[in-house]
Length: 68
Image (cartoon, rainbow, N blue to C red; front, side):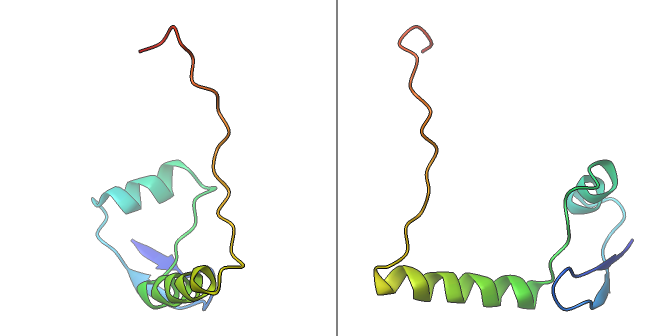
């Protein structure tokens, strides 16, 4: 399966039977990002976290006392 990176527009081939390929076929809202772009974003996110100005938003779901 040929996929195109959302950020850098490089075209790569992935295995047709991989879970990623299945996810991209069945849910068109999911997008593909190549490994280099993913690593770059991860690195910059860690740099922002280290500055102390980064707030990670967590879900604010309440725990139901009746569901274990």
